[in-house]
Image (cartoon, rainbow, N blue to C red; front, side, top):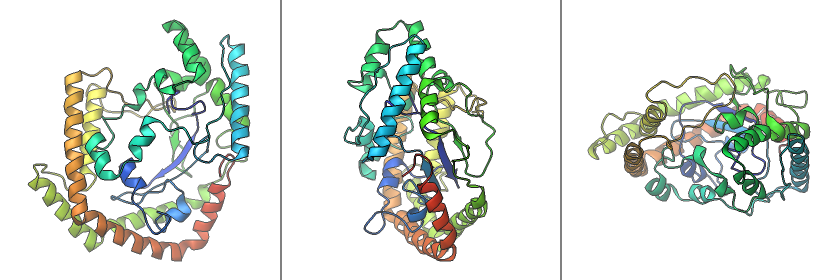
Length: 361
């Protein structure tokens, strides 16, 4: 997460990625099921759970800000602001405590992600090269007084300000520590979390402390979810629909795509090649992943990638709508319902422990 996202934006996200690249933001938000828009498993795995497009992602995150923040959450945010300001003062910088966000303020990215899948694809493709999160500037903060304070500093002083505020994550161009539940990550949480990170830890506790939920007990559940994903993908109804999707893409000039995530993967690879100079990505040692950005890439090449991404995503959506999405969703919900019936007790435990963790809902 970039320091420019929100006044309080440095949270540690616990995420289970059961399979590769999932659907785009718009596709996930509009997947829908029933009256509440959740699939059978999403009722238990969290509001960010996605099981569409050949992938399953379940996550629970420390909730800092967001829609309909409770009085307790707002109080915690104010406390974080006060602790951050006191720390920054010791570091020799002015920092103004702002009012916590209540969810009423919308950013330009909120508007983008609220678009229906077809409109999102037409404007942003998959959201890979078209939304450059890492290059968000202080101007995106709007009336945030701290953005104005920082803007008045010299370039050297700005770097010192950023490091004081966000520690090592500021030096990585904005990032977030990600690890699988129940699995030790090779990446380490940065030792220097900055004033804001320290303030968050004081209010919410450190990741992995005695108050954090122990997800090791759900190792077997995660393995069963992977088995479920394979069952869905290998279902004859899905494989037949995937072949029709592949033929549809080939007829439109996009040959060689066999899996429904191949289009997205292709753009990811091109993005990586441009932003890393062709060097393969390596796991971060600091625990802070640097977000890829096109700001230092040849503008002509960046524009070409964006154009290709949008064209590919638009056709991808059309071919999915021709039958794949409906077939996958039918099989997904059918098998998920069976899974819930057979594993309800463990799913209830997972829901309870991840919904009531320190700082959660």
